[in-house]
Length: 501
Image 1 (cartoon, rainbow, N blue to C red):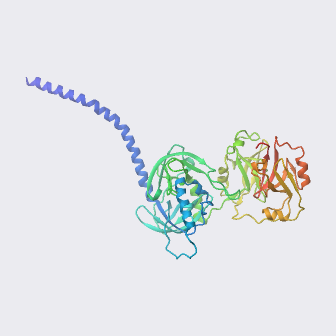
Image 2 (image 1 turned 90 degrees about the vertical axis):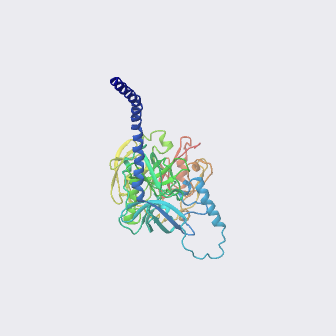
Image 3 (image 1 turned 180 degrees about the vertical axis):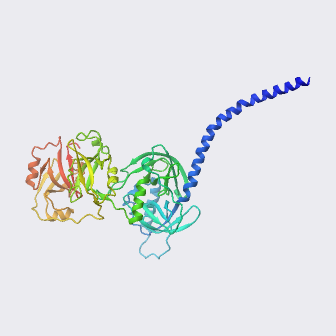
């Protein structure tokens, strides 16, 4: 009897065990996915813990009369990239400032901290990387760490063409962040932003690298002052105040410096790639400025220009088209010619304008070999880049007779270049004719020609006086296009004017 009872108990226990085994097995299968999620969750926590001590909040007391922005924000290309809501707030501040009475001198007052951004420590001895627009027109700068320590900061150097700035504080043994090789950053990988958006210090957001190599987001001030633009695009939430802070990968390494946003909550932010930021910051620390090399070219990427992208250019589908050569520049002293296509620099392919700039940036005075295609024929040309001048060279001119010809089909009026006209339009005296008027809506206006441009050739024929110009236009077909070689902003260029353009 006892044996039967014992057997029954064992059976019931076995049955109970079998009934709980299935849920346990299901729970074990489910926990594998949860464990993976927990690992990813922990990874983000560790990245934030690792990087945050290197991130700083930058408080800026700006000068009472800022020169960086005009009353409506013009004069700073980054103003237009601010989100509409934030830009409206600034515009309201500008309007209030304009309405304030200025008849009586204002008493001096202590600096007021009215601007804020982010930055990241890049050297343990007190060097901090941020954006130039964060510290623009700063009267006083204060750096605050996550542990509450504050330091006054000075500006070591700024680079307006890339919006990079380096600050210096008197401190040692700081936790410097590590740079990743941004060339190896992959589209789709995790991207984590740390900064102080809207005064919310040490906010952490994450997303992905959405794209690389974004350029032409900001307009160049002129051909003589091109912007250095090679942005990483991310969908990590970036807002005003994140500027200057790091964008890091899952290893906690800097892949970019957050710089631009396109609208609030749009998921479109832009960061300066780590490799470019590191190169520029090293130059600022060493020299207080970035010394760039130039070739003296106006160029277009074949894939960047819609017209050139539609079809191959003289048999070449990838490369950089030489559309202008600056007078007395390095390229003019070489064998380069208009309409050459640069495909390689020192054997490395270049497919867009930024790659060309990157390839020669540090090569001042060092000859470089360009692989060029001219009329379908490959060749190699040596050019020695020189340093970008701080200011354009003084312009000279001399006397020539003054008459004019109106080319109504083209929509321009030209005159012989005289000393007075050269001085009036700030151009050098050279063989050619100066454009004094451009008709609105004409083929010339649609191609961007303006008064002050000098025409040196028409359809391949040199024009040194008005007689040459008139003769070169005889038989010209505006439907097929009239090719002008011109000098504009100190560059030799070419434009093709067509009816209907």
